[in-house]
Image: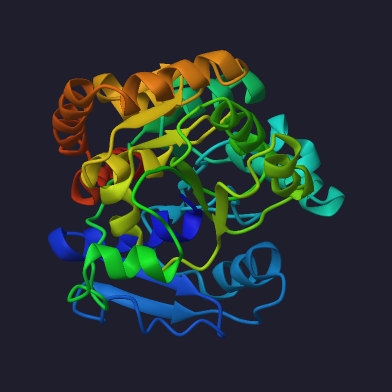
Length: 355
C-alpha cells in the first residue's frame, strides 16, 4: 500500500465522520482535488506554489509569510517541511528502503534516508501501519516508543464495477488463465521473493496447476522474469501487469490459494484482499505479515523453498483446510476499516495538538 492510498482514504474518512474539527488540506498548484471531498464549512483546500521543491521550499515559505492558524500540521508521508513552527506529525509506512537499498536509485535512497530520519526526529508524533514497522522506527532511529502510534490501515471492498455482468470464465479467458492456479499479487521486485516462489512452484507435480503473478515491474526484475525458464516452468507461469481493480477480485475468488512469500512488508494489504474474496492465504512469518494475516493464514520461512512448497501443497490438497482458512479469513478482515484507522489517528492528533 502506497502513501497515496493511505492519504486518500484517511482524508475521506475524516471528511465523513468529523464535523467538530476544521481541516485545511494544502496542495501543490498542479494538483486538482477533483477526486477529493468537496469543500464545506469545516473542510477547505489551499493551493500553495510553486510545485517545484514543494515540501522543502514552497510550503515552509507559505507558512512563514501567511502564518495560517493551525493547531497541528500532519504530513501523511515520511517528509516534514523544514522550519515548521506548528506541532507536527508524519506517517512512516515502512523503512524498506533501509533494508533494500539496491531497490532504489542512489539519489532516491539518500533523500529517503536523510529526510526521513530528520523528519522522524523533528516531529512530535509518528504514525505507522504495523507493530513491525514501529519496532523498525524505534530501533533504526533510536526514538522513544511513545512517539510512534500504530494505526492499522483499513480495507475497502474490491468491487466488480465495469465487468460485474461478465462471468468468471469470461474474465479468466481474457487473460488465458485456466481454472487451477496459485496467485501472487504485488510489485515485481526482489523484496517480494518471487524467485523462491517460482522455484517452489516448479516442484509441484500437478500438471494442470499454473502460477499467476499480477503486478507491475519494479526494480531489478530481470532475475524474476528469467526464473520460470530457469526452473523449467515457463509455460505454466503467467505475468500479468494490466489487471484492473474491477477484475482483480475474480482472480482472488478463483485461485487455489494466494501466496505472498515477501521478505518485508509495511503491512501486506493483498493478504486481506485475498481473505476478503474467499481465498486461502500462505504468507511469510516475518515483518508485518503475521499482523495482517492473524490466525487465518499459513506462515512460511521465506528463505526456505521447501517450507513454501509444503505449505502450498497443504492448502491446495486439503478442501477442509481451505474451508477453515476461508472462514477465518472473513473474520480477520472484519478487524480492519478506514473509519477505525481515521478515528484512532484523529484521537492521537488531538492529543498532540492539546485539544
